[in-house]
Image 1 (cartoon, rainbow, N blue to C red):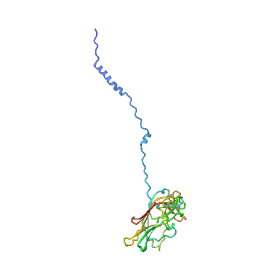
Image 2 (image 1 turned 90 degrees about the vertical axis):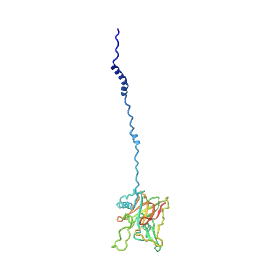
Image 3 (image 1 turned 90 degrees about the horizontal axis):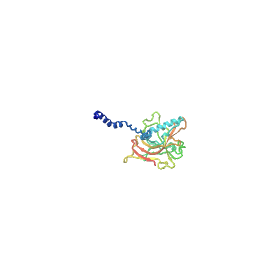
Image 4 (image 1 turned 120 degrees about the horizontal axis):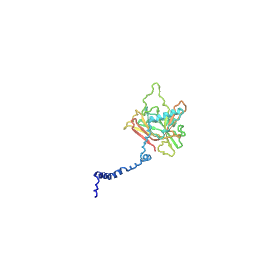
Length: 286
């Protein structure tokens, strides 16, 4: 007689079922992790970084004080036998104001064009009914100060920067020495600006011996009053270069004389102003 076969225990059946259910899960846990993506190369990262934009501010405009300082440095270097420098000034803008007529009317210039021209002055008109401002540029084309300046220059007109020891734009505050006795001759001019004109350049800015002139008239029938604080001459433009690439050239007749220093310029504007800065008249280059 056959013995009945016993059915599997419930615990065994549950264990087998668990193995069947956990099999796929365990297999999934044993899968290899995907390799991480390669980091972008250093070259690619650098190409994504934009270079910073660097803006260079233009050099400040030379005023009377800074221009005279550059002239002093050039004069000292020239007197010491060193390179006067000035190449870094080429192309710099300048705007120079200088006072004239502080002590009253000035007689017409005497002597040659180089020493007498290039100075602003004022004088009374007929019967003192008007007052005339004038500035006659000096003809420096054949001057020793300009000799060998540049092959392209056809004409050179000169302007003196008066009282180079005075950095301010107003009249001098010091009065004449009462112990000196009589009138005192002014010091020789030692600082100037040479307006250069090329052979093939525009000719509208050249004066060709003609003076800048402006007539001051009074109110109604009244004559104009003499200025108590002079007038102002304004010169504006850009520094140019001599043949050696420098903007300033100095000369001296001997070691015991102050060098005369001249700056080459491209003149853009000449103007007359009163003591308050009010524009009276202006001329612009072509």
